[in-house]
Image (tube, rainbow, N blue to C red; front, side):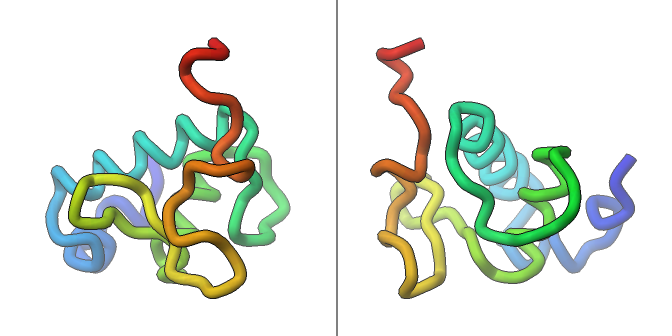
Length: 90
């Protein structure tokens, strides 16, 4: 298990366990479909990448439940070229 998920800090950061689960699932789908990671860590483990992105305040759920990023270097909503292929392509 991932130690960061055992701590309340990450749960509180995103606003609860349900939001954390939703954020992780949606971001992992994007990564598995080809989105580029927003952090540089020496692993291909998408769960570790997502946890690090959350801990570094790189991603969050917006008001409509979409994964959004908190950086000016990228678009606000992950849905363009960085999100990987659409579900229609699968």
